Image 1 (tube, helix red, strand yellow):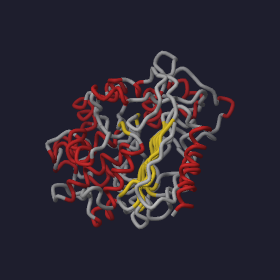
Image 2 (spheres, rainbow, N blue to C red):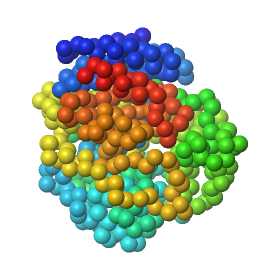
Image 3 (tube, helix red, strand yellow):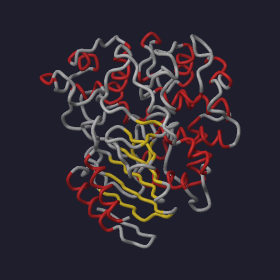
Length: 418
């Protein structure tokens, strides 16, 4: 079943056709797409049936959006900047004194938001497993003690899971609210979004489990490009350590820590789809503000629309704050040495918490900003065109270092309508 709602001047039929094609070819397990134009919804589509629950994907269905959550967390920080309560060029320790350990005394808030802090994973010495991540105080204490893996501000590497804890703790220290509570009170509540960082149990009836690909490679688990060497070893394995060893990594090395955490988050715990930690009640109930947001296309699109203009009288960021947030921070930087980070293909272009267009994720081209999430989740906006876009599928795409063909089909159709 698909539904389309058109509240603007129409002319978006090509998007509906593209979505129906994507739904029938790739997203039978369920997906949603929403597009706002100049503050009003012009496309609102959903459909599919979740194979793990047998439930139809309806207008209120939500699922985990993984790293697309990072944009929501960044917005919380920028709202505090806009209010004069947070300075991105101040040391983190001004707001979080315990952070000033092991060479982090002068580490700037700006470097947390732009993945330059050198804290791209929680060091294995901390003894934390992914299942410990719901314990906010324990994670924050470990990051406060940790020494950066490179000189902050001199290199960048995507902080897959730590971004949300680092930025989220600054939000908590400045506002007095946890990042999930701040997001609920200041963003989701006023905009009436079905969007949570820490999903209430009462809303579980709307949750659709994410669906892993039927077959994935060791490269998928390790978080490296699918064309990574060791082609003969591109087959599923039973543990993160096995996947890393098959690709030539030492599972205990610093360069493997992000891959290990990613694999433990995504791998089925009992061998069956649906048993993954990311699909558990414990995961979605926690506040893991880099990766455990739950929403749908409507939630993402409406949030982005309120960044670039008013939505029912609400605008989240003023134009100057938004423009500063979207300035690229890493075009002049390289990734850190290989003993710290495994090559992940085309590097992202990063603003202060937002991704900017690349050949892998072009969005609507120059002027766009947004954030993708593992498996194909995508939210973005283009201020000049007045477009806000949200696409969320339950089916995870089996490659993470190349363009998702679903995005290409949907965005090409959108371009034809503009």
